Image (cartoon, rainbow, N blue to C red; front, side):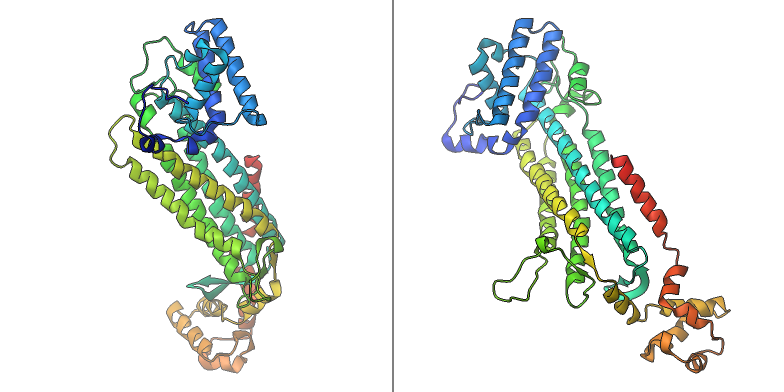
Length: 445
């Protein structure tokens, strides 16, 4: 297949220049953009009605044939834009050569990439919603299941499993917000900016923008073709999303091990060992954790491509797609595993309760009881620390042992250090958390 610009280059240079191996996935977006552009040109009288109708029918035919498998994308083409236009011209003749009037590959590529990114973000938002829904259901089921909360990976204070899971969901809700914000900012249409300086033809940029679902055209023509902020912003949001999924995955790895025993991961999301028959390895959680660095690398690559580029378009920008597409693919794959893995995760409340009862996580409550009875907190802290050093669970200390540490103690201290009472007295707003997540899920619909 020939080059659109009509020249020839060495084979190694052709391979370096070619992007169809990456951008071929944007064929739907490229055809959608061309249909909108051709319709606008026809309405403006720049194309004749006959040419406009032929282009429309030709593009719709190419779309249908690629979807059905009747037409294979020619991977020897320079890019997907070349393939579509050359195929169109082969099918409808000279009318196909008029499609590119008042358009450059610069604004065409930028438009395709925005359309593609917008669609992928919409898909990711749907997957995030599924993960939040799975977390919500599991958290509601275990709103009162006592477990130890941790700092420094050491048992610290009592919480509930539902409250802990809600923390996961809050991270994902913020991720959804960042992706939604990125979608809003990218939703401007570059078509009509042409190579960098607009066009002399009497086009209507608002028409093409509206036809493609954009909020409006990009205001500055140089910025329209050279802006890849939306790629960076999307990858930055994906990097945080991956960081959050990695933290969840890390906890699933820990919790599913015998040392914790808090959960069992579903069968479809663990693997066996080639040599040790007893093993159930949390490979899917580990892979989510491992693939996080890959998306970080995609963000760094995208920032590096842009860091020294003068305006407007430069061929370096061809490297935007590999980083963006890889980041989108990786995050989507991990999200598609996360929701069912959480939904199928089997908690073990009795193991959580045992862990909560064995780590003196009610020591702060003991100190708080003393403080409420007039002892300065620093003195109360020292008294509670001394009781912990005895190595005997606080619930099992005798009143005499308590009073030996401080004469302020009376029988009511036992209610204060009871684990269930400790959790109930805390301002853990599980009902409000669940209501917030329900509202998010309703809005996401």
